[in-house]
Each structure stands twice: as C-alpha cells, then as structure tokens.
Image: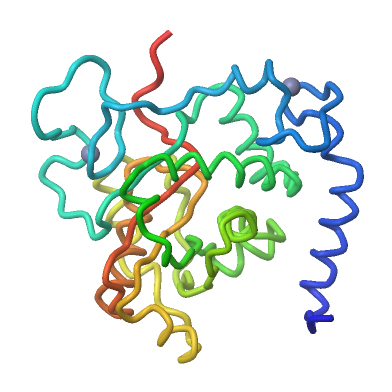
Length: 259
Ligand SMILES: [Zn+2]
Ligand SMILES: [Zn+2]
C-alpha cells in the first residue's frame, strides 16, 4: 500500500466514500444514473452542455461564430504575447457546466471533479493534443491559503482524473507565491498586472528536473482571458525550461454559444 500523508489519506477516504453514494445520481438533475455512464451525466444533461466547436482562435481557443477565412486573429489575444503555445477548452462555460464548476469550487462538491475531469478529455479531439503521448499534466496551483480554505485544488483534482484516464504523469510543478485579489472583477489588463510574479516553480529539485525539455499540459477548470495560464506558462518555460506548454480547460468563458 502506498504511503499517504494523513491529509491525503483523509482526502482519499472521503473520495471513496463520496464515490459510493454519488455516481448513482446524475449531478445535473439527480435522476438515477448508470454506474458506467461516461461522462457521468445522464443523457438529457449531456444535451445541456455546449461543446466548443471550430472555428475558434488557434492561440487562445476563443470561439468565433460564422465562417472564418485565413488565420484567426481574435479580440482576446490581439496584440498580446502569450507564453503558452495554445489553449483549448472543450465546452462553453454556460448554464449546466458553469453551475457544475461553481458547485465544485464554491460548494466544495469534490465528487464533481470526476465528471468535470471526464469532460476535460474532449480536448483530445484536438490533433495538437492527441498526437503527443508524452505530455506532463501540471495543475494551475492555488495559493496555499486558498487551498486550505477550499480544502482542495480543483485543477489538481481534474488532473487526477485525467491522469487516471490517460496514464499521463501528473506533477505539481508550480506553486502560487502571492495571494491575489479575485480575478473575476478585473479586466484583461488588470488581470495581467494582478498576476505578475504570482507563480513560481516547485521548491523540489526532483520535480523541476522532470519538466526540463518536456511538453506540459497546463490544466485548469475555466479559461477566461488567459492571464493566469500565461503567467504559469511563462514560469514553466523561462525557469523550468519546458519545451512546450499547452493549456487545457473544461470550459471557456467569453463568447457564449449561439442559441
Ligand atoms: Zn441529468
Ligand atoms: Zn485568441
């Protein structure tokens, strides 16, 4: 049996206990759910999701409505130097999905990380992700104070599910060293300034040496302007010497789906 610290043991125990009760009900509507439903939502609730389909910005994943000719130049990344190679979200942060993410983060419904982690796998439909087998999963870190308050880091919980499903390695390569005010209330420019110097590499040399020259999949729940993931990617590349950083999130805020 692997040695777990008491915190991890408690989390693992809670997870198993929650798993016993939770998967049998659809988290979207609480109707009974087949145990092997994948993703773990009932069929009507799956239709309440809004997959983010092409065309979208090749850099930041922002959705475009209509026909696009030539290279995409989107309002979100125009004039910006983004440190990540590209970002991709599987769905729009809309209605049911937005509610599920909200319940995971603020309602502390940790069991929802399973279905949300499964939904993250939609990003493997993107050839740029699917064609590499050697990604390392790195969660966007929370500040330790916030993580204590929430009792878990939702991005890491999502990574855990993706690691189980794909067999990819998961590494806590980053830490958040500055407590920042809530990003939600800030515009793009202020978000960037608010986050400057907020992240650093792990203190553990053994972790740092594993990212040098490697392809990193930075994982988060929602992509808004990309300010957070830009800062993380900057550290992974400049200090960690990662060769590539792509961002995957469950959902994309910004341009809403049509209809
Ligand atoms: Zn349902
Ligand atoms: Zn863009």
